[in-house]
Length: 287
Image 1 (cartoon, rainbow, N blue to C red):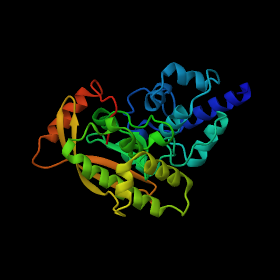
Image 2: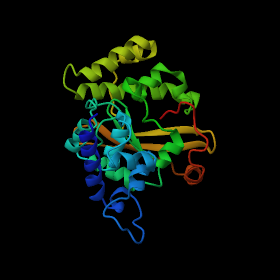
Image 3: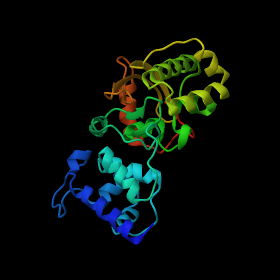
């Protein structure tokens, strides 16, 4: 990438950083802020980068940022869809597929996610690609947003890799499979006929999983809105939860949050999980 283009990338990142207040992204402002907007270190933390790496980007130096890093920066800086696309072009990267893990997160859903800190929550696409999670959700399920391509869809991993199911009790697996398939049928139906992304995912699932093929043939359709989830965490044990959804206007994204069921000890376990954090995580977590 040319030196000029790198300089433009650094200038753009700096301008977006300076317009955001800490409270806009869930941070405590703190005293004696000598710079407008966010500090470089705060953007680095929000994007999961080192301070040194992000500082080099703003200076117009360093290596070309990856697609994953660009997506993380776009979310940390609350970029609009057009700003996100401009960021990718400045970095000389192709624009990501709309439904993949680098998708632009709906601003209202991202804002709500930022303000939720006492219950696990995440934003995912209608094809079950996890886009972003709050820290408690990462502590409960691991980081689900790092897989590229169709592997970024959790429903793909659910039927392609048995390890993806390990956080559920065995007696709950069949019901979860049916729920995934019925919800996917609703999502495919909402999309335009012949949608390429949905068609590729569906074709691969039908080919690789006899279980999926059999359930798909049953024609069940049901949007997942409020479900019971029992999740087995390796440190705090069984979590008994309501899983609820809030959808974007077009239905392409949803905010999922997990609320403790009344009459259980799940609230206390989630409080403990905020302390435990990500010290003990799954090899291949599920949701």
